Length: 344
Image (tube, rainbow, N blue to C red; front, top):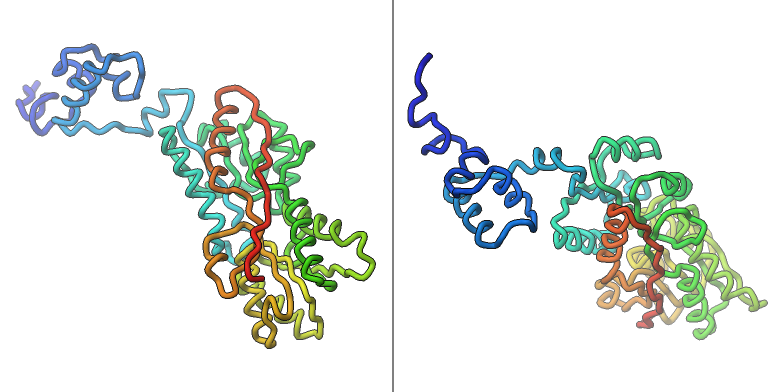
């Protein structure tokens, strides 16, 4: 048998260090090294510093995937976006990315990895299989889209799940979102104050959030005999799809004097379509968007919108998911909902 050279021996220059080598060099046990590398609180600060200094000096890198396999948890959260509601799966609404940024920041504070929209998760079985295979500790879904029925079924399983969207007491899953019905009512009251009588809602009411906004708008008009509420379905949430649909609606001879758009981005598309026909807000019509994204305040004209306090949404979504991962129950939360009146 050939003797190992000094270069090949563990712990020597050029060799790949093991935890046993680090333990020997730091004069601690191998289990102590493991605890340090995995962030265990059961180690004194002095010992932690000594072990980490040895690891840094010798270029030791923790294999995070292997570490995950040694633990019950993966320390990974899967975040699902609603690509299906956008043309060709391209999401252009900055609101979604504001939410995603908040979730990402909250996960990083907890030292959790973010796995963005794993492919193939289209039904309850796929979600369950991914969870049971330890692909993630749980799921945060940003936008119910048209998947409410599937999410309700998933909510009855053992899979940790939190959804950004409409909050319903009978949903069976934990959700965080604004009071969409109230948002619609607030838009309607704004139109009434402006003396508008022919209202249009722009959006796909197969989405539970948007259905509730439309219902709230109709409720505001219920006791107004001279107010009509029209509905314009949008096949895709993409900007150009919205603009083209509104352009075709106006070309057919219809001219509402108030428009409630499903988002601020959609409200911008509406503005462009109306402008092509020589119509401007607030002179010819009133306009309300939703989400209060930063560009809405700087758009010309500045867009009146429904604000839903998304600055705390990311932290709430992560907190409620972690409660479930830890074996607890998490209650749904409705965020404060208010109208921000601007130029339109």
